[in-house]
Image (cartoon, rainbow, N blue to C red; front, top):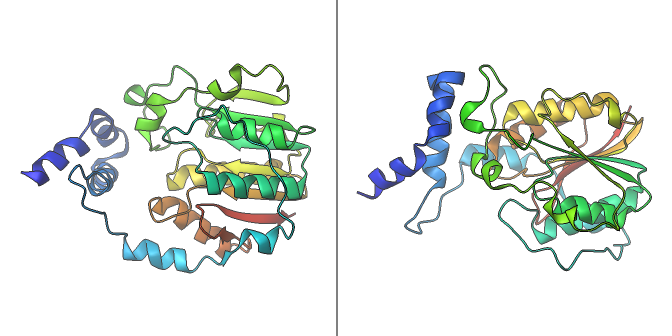
Length: 264
C-alpha cells in the first residue's frame, strides 16, 4: 500500500507532459527520481552511491581557506525562510565570496522570491545586481514542444518573484529580468565578474547557464553554482565536467555551493 501511495504522489501532470515532450526514457528517469524523493512515511532516502562517488572527486575547502578574514555581512531581518530559498550557511558563504571579490556587475540566475538578491544588493551596494527568472505567466504544464528539460516544478508554481525586494524602495541596485535562461540574450550583463547560478537543476540548464555566463564574463570572474549535492545529480555531473575541462572547481564545506575563479 505504501508503494502505491508513493507512486501516485510521484505521478503528476508535469511528469505526463514530459513523457510526450522528451520521450519515455527521460520521463521514466524523472518519475523514478520523484518516487525516490517522496516519502510520506518518514523513512530516510539513501543517497545514490554513484552520485556520492562523483561528489567525492570534487575538492572541498573551508570558507576560511578562500576568505581569510570573514566579513561582517548584512541580512534583512524581515525576510523569512521559504522552501526553495538559500539556506543560512549557503547564504553566508555566498556573501563572504561576494564581499571578497567586490564586483561591479553581478548576475544571478534564479531569482525565486528574491531574498538572496536582496542580500547581495545590501552587501555590494556599489554593484548592479541583475537577476533572471522565468516569466510570471510560465506554465510548466503547457511548455512548448522541444524546450530544454526543467525540474523543481513545485517551486516554480509557488514562487513569488522579487517579493523580497518589492517593498524595499531604498534598494536601487537590482535589475529584474523575466526570461528563460536558455533563450535570454545575456548582452545586458556583458563584463559581469560575479555569477550565482541557481536556476533549473537539470544537466542541460547547468551547462547552458554556466557556458552562457562564461561567454560574457569579465577576463577575471568568479562563479558560484548552487545545489552541488547528492540531491542534484545533474548539477554534480556538470561540475565534474567543468573540472575535466580545466576549471578549478571546489565545494564549500557544509554547504551546497561549488565555486571557481575563472581566468580568460
